[in-house]
Image 1: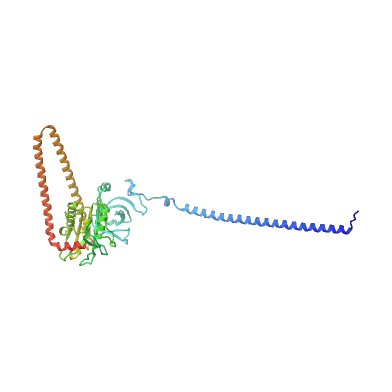
Image 2: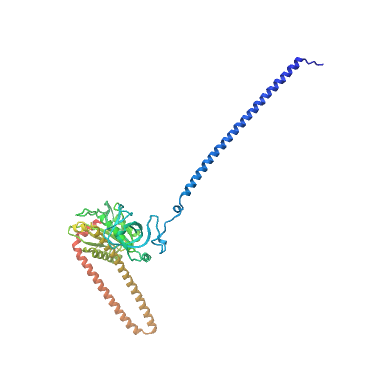
Length: 471
């Protein structure tokens, strides 16, 4: 039998109470910890959500601003394309304005004053590209505020509208002119720095010469040969291009280093139809005037082009002399000039004057004279191609005539009229003989001119040798 004392009961009750209190406190702490962790987690979530919202609001604001800026740009600035004059209809020319504010035009104007400046920009402070003389035709592409825009060498330049007027040239002839275009290679002689290194004077030759001799200097003006020849070449190029030719220059600045041989090779690389070197020589002080140089008929490299080279040189000298009134000293045939020896096309060196002569030196210092010289050389090139076409036509006609006569022989032989045919052919043979005698007479005329040239050469033999070294 067990007995439980009151003390034991009381002690047991107290222990149970303490244990329950302890467990309750532990549970309370654990619950508070859970609440605290949940609260911290909730705060972090809310904080992250707030940051994200702020970021989104900023991004949205930026996008709206960018969108508003884009919408503020007029559509015409984004989408408008300047009209292309090459596709304008006839009734649209003169009514459209391009992005530079020029009224688009497609016609020709003619220079109506001497020493007219062609500038790189439409203002009087802009650099001068070249100076033109009266009578030069220019392709007009636009007009604005007293300035006429013209196309030269594939680029746009500007002339005061006061010095040009519309000419009646039909610009649609460009199509015809481009079909018949010849490539003219112009070589303005010399450069600022002479090149004493040597090169062969001809392919396979053991003879060498300086790659480029020093430029001659005007005895009175002090002008340099390389400046004179470049100015002349640029004016000549502008004139020839208005006449439908394609023109290539060996240089468009004097700060180059291109040898005589390399200049001829450049002409060949450009598939040039003819090569013209422009130079201003130096000799004794009394030697003056125009003079030409070509290879001899026996030249191993391009003697086959002798006849055409002679014709080219003669026509150019004649044109220059007629336009300027300057005397001619004739044509020198030589195989000492490197450029001519390396040319694979009709070629000539045109000496436009002697800087060692006071009169020539002063002439070549005047823009008006240079303009006339360029015009005369261009006229000579025109005459050369007119002569070449005539020669080609005559050759074709002779071949066609010979073919027709051959066909006539065959038909007459078939008809059994051999006697009559022989008589008629004999007459035809006499006609051929007559033609041949006429050709001989023409040859005598050329011979006389050559002799005249040779008589002139007697005055310049010394200068000829010197100039061969100056090349």
